[in-house]
Image (cartoon, rainbow, N blue to C red; front, side):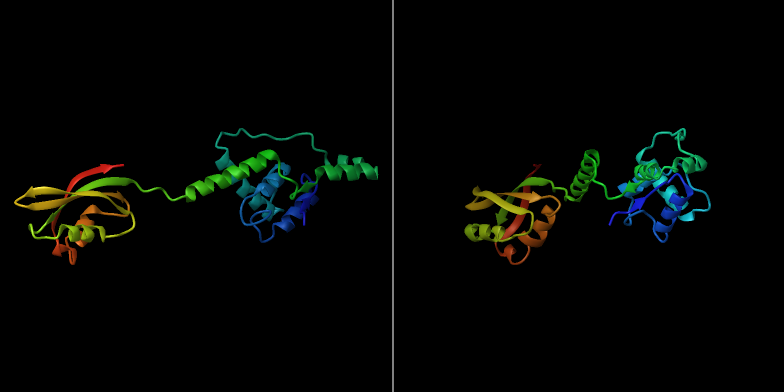
Length: 227
């Protein structure tokens, strides 16, 4: 149901807002909205002590607007408002008075303008962007995995290495490289997400610990490059 305020430059108009704001901080809802800005624009100046609710609300809206418009204001007053006595004379023709009241009504549920809709869409888009998780950086790492001796089953050694699985760890290509005396080492590439995988922990807690240390004597980092 639409909320309508009339004659906000008069005492009777402010009384309606005073009653509406009883127990509330804003015109509608629990946050500043376009409704508050519309009513604020229609109230020519801060109401006196006779309207404590409106006065407190007026200061709150002014504070929010000051943050949005940081430029220095010199103070502007809007003239041309009809005085109370003048208004009573103007109300003599009933139809004329009714038309004046209609012009002064504020419909808080009127359709938004295109600019208001665009601004609202931009605010929502900005909120979604801030909620998106930041993508973790990635690194490419080349490891040398050495067996205990020439009798170590290198196929099982590689299976032991690749059996280590965790979020953010991706094993790549590998090959056996002769070291000497019939011993070969496994050279293997892996890609890691930096926020999820620590290479030192991977080596100490997984590759060179039980049960993988049955095949793996040591692991060296040959190359470490950010992607």
